[in-house]
Image (cartoon, rainbow, N blue to C red):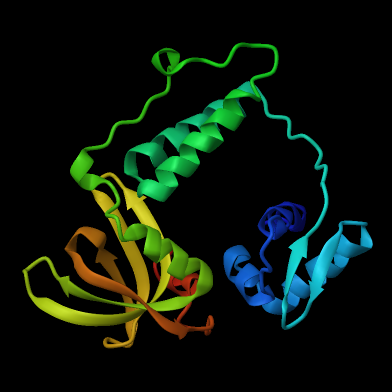
Length: 225
């Protein structure tokens, strides 16, 4: 993520009446706590009304005006198609967020009337049984905050096992959802189908990215050679 984009996202996370800790912001933005401190200092230097301190938390006071974003027709269609896919495959929280974002994008169709649902030319369809299960929202939260997760799993042969993992990423594909994780039991990377997971629970155990156990290493191992 570009720093400019990250700063805009950071401003969004800081809005509200509750203090947000640097550690929580770091988890949401997928950066280090030190980077969050630097970004907050940069925003404060630019005049943004940020209150708080390290070790306590931060919040944004007062109105904030951000420059409007301009998108061309293809960019708007790309985002609309992506949000339509989220509406078809996401958990309840993601579906609601996609519909809200769709409304904002519809309002950005400058110079033309936003197309109604029945007039959209780019569409998405997914079988209901392939949509994200309800516990996918908890997995997304665990990914942002770097919380370990435990669950029971049945592999393709029906063999059961109990797993304790570091969640690294979620992948949506035509046949459902996959969790990419570092498995503590197997001491290696594993990819789990969400429709084979049960009794999923987010644990009160944080983890830090470690070389050799992070998403970057997983992707590097599977890159074409």
